[in-house]
Image 1 (spheres, each protein chain N blue to C red):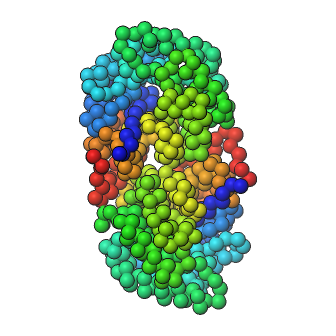
Image 2 (cartoon, chains in turn purple, cyan):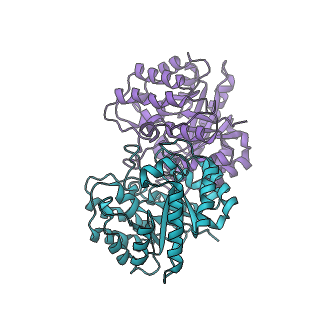
Image 3 (cartoon, rainbow over the protein chains, first blue to last red):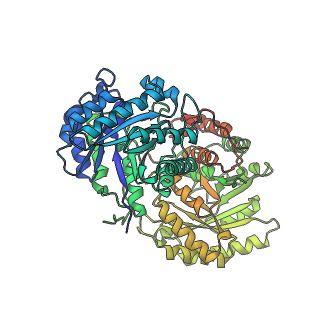
Length: 307
Length: 307
């Protein structure tokens, strides 16, 4: 029985928040439609942050409303705090992710909050989620989990501590995010194993990996080996990387999907369709760097997907 | 005890043969010197093919002579046939690699030789190597080992058959080469294990991987898991990929070295020095695309190599 792996498409949030231009809502919706048509079943469609901070994502509620029309699509959003979570629940998002940066320096710089303050938000959000009429999935994501450009090394012990704290605060599960692209495959195995030992493997099923130093897919292999079944990725690696010009930030959805399908995993994705989705971005964002290799290289001669 | 992994630098051969311009011999030598200074201990410095076929590598004998001055450097060359091998042995190369394409269609197109004919060359070369005053290492490399743009799928059985035939012809060992960038990590594990079972793990220690679809370093992880201890790579991924514009052909030495060192393997390479070597290429080949992410991203804050 082939193992199902979920690719969680985060381009509409992590990709779009990293570029200067604001994509019109209609284009975002067309993009989402094309992703669903290609077999993507989870999309992080935006982030509930103040419009003045991230104008690129100011239409998130509208995008959520559009995305919810697709039966079978998990509509995910990022929320930086309880206020954002409230808006997310009101909009009908299926999954909320709250980032908690392992590096407190990064947390203060990014969100102007200490660990304790973010955990307090987590408790508030968990209570909201519990009280809401529709069941939403609440993920606490430990970001800078593999190192930080401000603090340097992030210890395994710190990641475990925060994962435990997020679960205690009421999260349904925890995610790990390699915000800075510092992770290497040995570290991925070790940190995931440590968190699994602390909170149970069923409570850490997803990784958000970056390709800043080209190790993105190698880190996916490590994640697969320790039982990870969800990987975030960005179509065309949209958004690049603020830390390294020319480096794709997020791993590229198309290359990831090809690798998984080639290895015999099932993703539910139609690769031929997926490889064409980036045309929407190429048309709407002329001149925006698009990353990844598989669309240009094409699928291998004779390549057949398992299903 | 950390595991030593050898990075075999093939840029001066595989990289240079793929670009239009011919690098002056003096620049090649300076490049080699810088690689050695950075801790590289094996370099494929050229190929003994007729100058009219590959003018870029016409000076290989001179480059070999220069490279041999570095004590502790294994000077490797590609040889397409016995004639090339003769020149290689005369020049004093330490390691000869003869490619045998698993896809016979590719073999005929590339070398105008059938499998049987290439194996005949192998027997001749093995005899030459045995008779030569200085001991050279003779590797038969199965290319298109993971698939071919002309034939499509290449079976595991074919690769095993050819590996056995190369050993029977007198090779010291066999290599596997993903010429077309078709390989995926599961396939790498399976094919390496099958060849190991047939000819012994000590006779297949190296892989030549391409990054055509972005799977290069993921495939390295798979190789490490099944006991591979040598990986070919090209500095700055020089040479790109004829099959996919914008795709690096060879995996990028700098990204590979960072990954291995970050994982705790020992490569003997000084990363800080290595990351600067590409400047030689940038200066000598203005406008030539240089690939890889680690040089631009830099090493992680606080990163220390093990030794």
